[in-house]
Amino acid sequence: MSAHPPRAWIRLPSGAALDLINPAPDAWTDEDLALRLARTYRWGGESRWAWPLSVAQHSLLVLALRRAEAPQPLSLAEQRAELLHDAEEAFLGFDCISPLKRVLGEPFRAVGERLMAAITQRYRLPDWTPESHRLHKHADRVAAASEAVHCTGWSEHEVRALLGITEPVLAADPLQSRYGGSAWEPWPADRAAERFLAELRSINYD
Image (cartoon, rainbow, N blue to C red; front, side, top):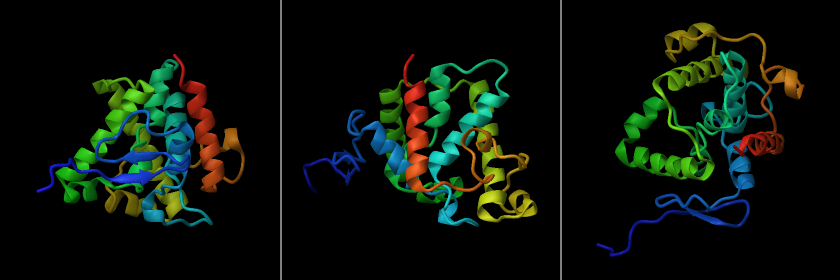
């Protein structure tokens, strides 16, 4: 057996390298994170539109939903937690659905958790409380139900019966009022990266 610990290096858009097995919190730039999330697609890359839906756009949607539903304004740290809740997927390179995560097992879970720990340290993310996690998961699943129908092409019946999501499917796109464009249309990667990066920079200071 090798005496060296396992490593799995990836090249980032900035030219930096990140070890997926032992990620350092300073190994990437904010631009790296934004662009890789914009190039990481939800729903297996399936789309009714010209572009698949990126994790960057999904993250902005979840943040918008949490802001709209919060009984009082979210702190900057709480907003970062919402925006970055799937940030490890930028480096894993795909959005793995929960049933597949269970099949892939402990090694995959451990890699994802180490990446998320580095992200948590880098961006000073707060721990979820039972209530904040409940509210987050509700927003995340509302986003998922709405994306499944409007972006991917599942029917509302299939969302309930096959995907097991019981949260409502929204008619109005919460991002349209801010960014314009057609409701629920996935953005090109460069546009998704630009909008994600601008949001991250606006909330990355306490």
